[in-house]
Image (cartoon, rainbow, N blue to C red; front, side, top):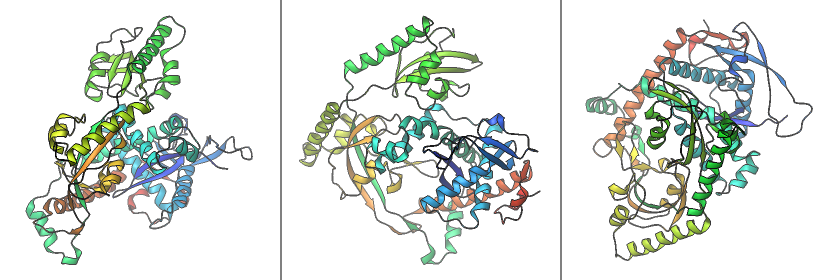
Length: 488
């Protein structure tokens, strides 16, 4: 039997790993449906993508329990299968390594709940869109081809990815909180590397500095009117009692993170968790029976319905619609940038000036178009390793010489998923080299800091295991685990 895979995002003490597992496993299928720790099995549904010999249901087994979170045998088997498909090699027995890694993830999620760590729906949606956009680029930019390859629609992909990306963000945030106070001094860095022979010093990958100018294709007023009229129609239908807001959200909302929940945000949220314009309208709602006016944000147009208020937090549902951009608008924006690139090459205007006055990328416009990257120490830097650039930008930059300006190309805005047109200039390239304390102090400091943080997290996991309820199926008790405290 073939099952439809859901991408699970899980981490060990020192690494992340992407793997596919069957739908609904990270948090447990129907969280409350599992037996108490004394139970041994559950029945879980598998969403088949091919006809098989009556695969309506399979008997699954709870093999570990961490806190109150179960790990299923199917979780392990499906990660193992996907690993084999992707050629992943495990350092040890995967039947032991996989459940341990899943258990480590549960520890972080459990601590995140204790610490009241939150992530917003917009953050989850942005992460999901980045993943899907990356997949689209990997198959040549063709959405239909991706749907055919994955054997599911983009909407289904978004739904399958949502919970896992939310968990990943929670885990990331919890890890950041745990190591937030760890620092290293210049003396620590010099002391660490002074003991290493020269041929053991780290290799610094190629780094680049890139300037960018973007133009967002203009949405036709006719399309904006269509979207607004549709939202007004939805408001009228709900107000007249023809249908519910939640039903319309499930059918028509283009926010993948909330649509399947009837447009409902997962929990109560504060102002800081929402887009400012959205928050301004949402927090002024007082009557759950009323629907807000149409709200425009960078993500599109919304209507909002209040569910409840609790102190300085609210619970709402919304419907999002994104106006469609025509190919003609994309071509026009691209031709504008093509003309601008020729003027820059011809010396009529500098890239710095053009970025300051013409680019609509608010993140780089005030810095002459220079792209910025968040370093491991939380400080901004203009240096990027190629893997840290947006994939569309990296592909173009890789073909440029220092000082060259690219031809126009299309890319996806990582924040809101909108199509943009762009040109870039390679400002500087620092080729791969052996690290030196004078030229690469920050990179060397990052290495020492990362080592300190990894050691702290490793010790935290050991301590957390000792204070967390863990039950393991007897057949796993002979495993050579990385952490010895699992077996009480």
